Structure formats: structure tokens, C-alpha cells
Length: 201
Image 1 (tube, rainbow, N blue to C red):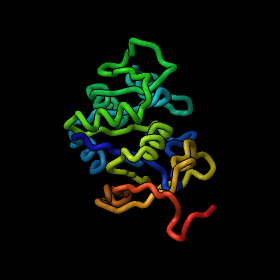
Image 2 (cartoon, rainbow, N blue to C red):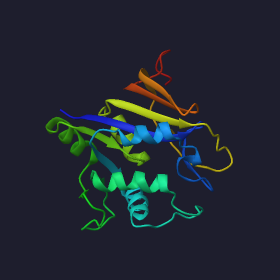
Image 3 (cartoon, rainbow, N blue to C red):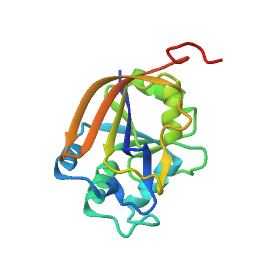
Image 4 (cartoon, rainbow, N blue to C red):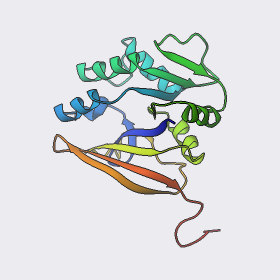
């Protein structure tokens, strides 16, 4: 049976990106990059917006507000290109042009439940905030990992990750610091029906 990992890279204030900031907020270091290169074989799950962004990166496109794709980002995208990818979308058209990508139009929770039951490797989300929310609400997430970069993007932050989430209890299973500044925390999540002091309604 496969495990499902929800995996986020964030600013301290929980944003997935920021206007005018490079990838990794420009703060990736050698320890963190080495760790990225050591990750096990993964099947990545994503939605249409993340697919468009990352496949654009892979094709050499530079997102608006970013001067150029740096070598560190290019290396990360090369690894994604080689990996198996499942893309959940009703707006994209076949065939998908990014290598090793499969388009799925069916309900994501139903499909991921089947992938977990019938697979043996690790499934991991990348970006795709709505997809992550729906999989968490469906009780399918086994591990919840956040890599926190030491910036607060109060004026420029985009894609606030936790807006719209249910209440979730988190049991820490791993933590680590990279390059003296980047913090990894990993949890086992449990979606709550109501907060500990009772049903607010």
C-alpha cells in the first residue's frame, strides 16, 4: 500500500510564493539541495495550475516577476521531469506535453484512494493547494511535511496555504534544520470534527 505525503515549501507566514521572490526565496543552501537530491522515487500528484507552471519551467519559460531560472531551480525541475506525474484537471487537453505525465479527469479523492490501495511507492503532492485540501478532508493524507524558509512575505506573499483548511491535529514525526536556517517539520495529520473544547456550533 502506498503512502500519501502532502509536501509544502513555505515562507514563515505560510505562503507558497511571493511577488518578486525567486524560487526557494533565494535561500536554498547546499545541505537542503543535497537532501532534495536524495529523495526516494515518487509519483507526484498535481492540479492544472501547478502543471502549467512546472511544465513551463521545464520548457524554459520564466514566470512573471522572476529574472531568470537559476541553476538550482533548473536541477529541481529536471528531477520532476523524470518522475511519474498524475495531473488532475478538467481544463487541460490531452496529450500532456510534459514527459511522464498522465491526465486524470475523475474525482481526485476516489482515484488517489485507489492508487494508495494498489501501489507500493510514495505518492506526493506538489503545490496544488486545492488538491491538497481535498485529499486531507478525505482522510487520505498519511504524512504532512512543511519546509519553512526564514522570510515573512506580509506585503508580497501569494497562495496562502492554510486558508480554507479544516482544523487538523498534527503529531510530529520528524524535524530537521538545513544550512542553519531552513526548518523541516513532518507530521501525521488527523482532521478534527471540532476543536478540543467542543463543537463551536
